[in-house]
Amino acid sequence: MERLTIAEAAERLRNRSVSPVELVAAHARRVGLLDPVLNAFVTTTLDEAMAAAQAAEAALARGGPRGPLHGIPVAHKDIYFTRGVRTTAGSRALADHVPGYDATVVELLAGAGAISLGKANCHELACGAMQGFGVTRNPWDPARAAGGSSSGSAAAVAARLVMAATASDTGGSVRVPASFTGTVGLKPTFGRVSRHGLFPISYTLDHPALLTTCVADAGEVLGAVSARDSKDRTTVARHDAERLPAFDGHLAGLRLGIPTALLASGLDSEVEAALSAAVARFEDLGATCVPVDVAGFDLVATTHSVIWLAEGASRLRGLIAGRRESVGAVVARRMLPGLLLTANDYFLAMHVRERLKESMSRLFTTVDALVLPTTPFAAHEIDDLVAARSDVSRFNRLANLTGEPALALPCGFTRGGLPIGMQLMGPAWSEGLLLRVAAVYEEATRWGERTPSEEALTGWRDDGRAAAYLRQLDGLAADFGQADGGEPSGTGAADWVRRRAAAAGLALTEADVDGLSGQARGLMSALAGMRASVDAAATTSSLDYLV
Image (tube, rainbow, N blue to C red):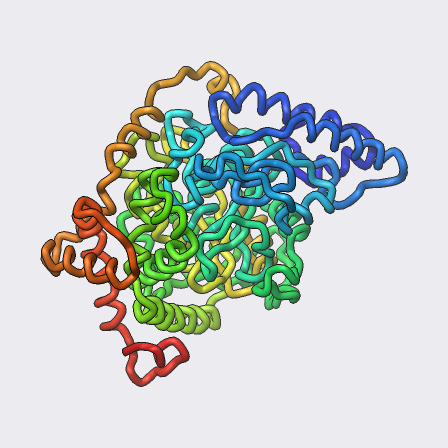
């Protein structure tokens, strides 16, 4: 029963061959059986879910389903506010936080009939590490990470503990775990889905997102949560701007852009082979695949980093500066440098962002969508700190900067049986196109039909990797980032930190200054690179503020 798609379950609920109680009970059983291994949930609400299932069954008896997701078991990433159910954002600092209202997405899904089984584990404050409520394990191999920050949501969907889960994406937080767990992760266009009631990080980069086991289910959930919301002024009421007709088992007439330089930029050999095979399959299905250059991609990481740090640090200042002892070392280490950035730094990054948006707009006049890697490698071992701290999100941040939709889906497996993901990225409001293209590919390849082994999960015994990982993180308390290694000198970076901290009214110890100097070198280099890219002839509202 837990292998049903949402559409299949809806049909069985309508013809009474399955009841909401049976559907929820089957998934609740898997939560009890597998979550002790996976640690996908921070909080479960199984009793409340069974009561909701009984109410859903009574509603069917009275005349019909409440909505398109009637009786469908889901989970919510623990950054979504849930009335009467604690919302921790994966942090012990918020362990007792119980909201008095539901996030708009939670409200919409409940209105469509979905039944929540609980709150899914995530990286602390959706920007740190799993130092709050333990490490979520990958259902395909519990010795490996599930990706982040929407780790619990992805693991719960991949292991069929729920049929769908909410997630978020500020720089790859839905697409990375989707790639690691063999699920479908959708980051919609900025403004399509309300962010009201989500724990905030970055005002201009945060996107509500979703995870499902198949493409069609992603479309069902997206339809339920897409709405203008007066409580989120960034939401827009509009329909997709479709330029292509529906595809019937083929992709004739579709032009896909293949950024060949990115596909040759340090991918694991098995990931590179899987992506090459996916491009060949798209061509077999009738698509025209053309090489493209993503102009300005070399500035994506630095631009995203400055915006994310500036916006995130301003929102989290009370936690990372005022109550640093209550949050994990990784959150403090990653976010504290954001308090050293100035308004000029921020506007410089926003100027470069505008140039990237213009570049992508021009690119999407020549192709309908892009095929990109999702992650440079498959899921790494939990205690592999080198992999965990590497730039695993480098192919994801572009869509957050431009606000354009991106869909991650499976495109193969490693020889060791780990999922490999790719992503499709399209122009704004092209979710319908991306879903149709992905559905044709999914039907042709059937990668999504493979599932993790329940027997292997139930027989697994703790290998100590999670504990080793957490010990390593605790040992990094004074390390605020990897040193850049180049100019300016360590002394120059330390002086820069002291000046910026004083201007920001931030009290730092000399140990803090030493720890921050490594990341300061990276920030100073990033800002210099962005300034060198500025086109003085192109004046914009943000460039006007630069001095």
